[in-house]
Image 1 (cartoon, rainbow, N blue to C red):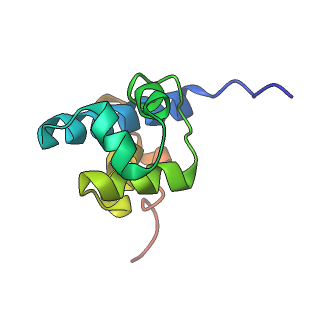
Image 2 (cartoon, one colour; image 1 turned 30 degrees about the vertical axis):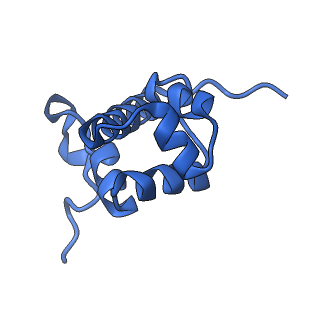
Amino acid sequence: MSRRRLDPAAQRRGQMLASRLTQARRASGRSAEVVARSAGISVETVRSIEKGRTSTPEFFTVAALATELGLSLDELYTAVRQPPRSDLHAHDDPSVGTSG
């Protein structure tokens, strides 16, 4: 079975996830190998995510990496779902037009 091609928004989220995880790993001063071993996943998986080749990694893989890097899943979700400022439109914001 082949994977469906991701839409541009999903591709962008994958790139943002890759960027945030790579940034956190580098800030920790650890190599991909060390983080992978500590998180219990393969270094190939870490590299694939960081290079954006895996735009939609499995939840438990992301959770393991987030835990190992001291990131909360809420923080990652917020970082990944934020579109670039130039892409913001009122119709894209689910909070527009709702009372809260």
